[in-house]
Image (cartoon, rainbow, N blue to C red; front, side, top):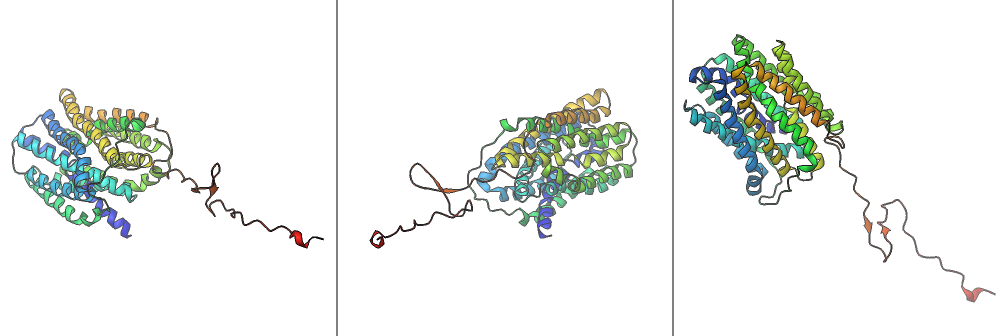
Length: 405
């Protein structure tokens, strides 16, 4: 129970950095767009700025961990995220908002990577990534009911993130040596995982960014928007129950492929009008993709920090271009295009993930070899007891020739 409590407090990292700082913007988008006169492309550019900041943060995480350590980097990332959330309320200027959203992306990436490293060491990956659902559920249940008061919402989320920083402070404690060396990033052996992750990043973000705009075009009432987002967030919270075992036992990229296939299916469900079931299926899958990728990396790389930072950089690059491209397409067609975008790219990622071979995602590594002690030149002798055999004893004395008659 204590282990779960620590994991839950650590999961406030993704609740703050993703659930509030990243995904809640989709809820605020209709109100900000109406109040500030944005086009869909401009609204997508705001999400792109956050993604660009996320890219910078991912690149900066490994050097920051070397300098400060994993624990301090996580804590400072949480504090800066809280400050940038509150800071989004201070201005209506488009350029200022772009800068603040970018800064929020930088700190969010640091929290995402360092928290993932800590969670991987403690084998609580699914719980950690499910924390984003708490932020989505809380914001989903409250923001649509507040109408166009987007400034008050940003300030309130900043206060909530500050509280999350305080509660998660001790949960992030590790035994890192500050100034130590990190392992090198491993990319080439994990190429199919990287490609699948990139396709996911470009695709998934458009669904959650434009979900509220999609609902608004269909004249969905505020309580309908709130219930849809709350259902999505709660589905994320409960997703570990569904995916924890597959991530530990299914071989190669099968779990990742299954998650991506269902994620693409959730978008198609929305296109046929079943928005709430679509949101639930989306919530049960999308945050399990980073968990699956982290598990695959952990199973194949001894020190995953640099590799996770490199994959998060790739992920951030996809998030940066995805909303803008989808927004441009939607301006020329309709918001249906943003949902279809998610389906096609996630299905493509699922096909690539099937190319990942090897043992279970988070399975055990190879058995250690039997240690042998040095022996005489030309031969080696096992350590006593290592093979279950007794070491040879002293030779028995032969008969005494003086007693022979």
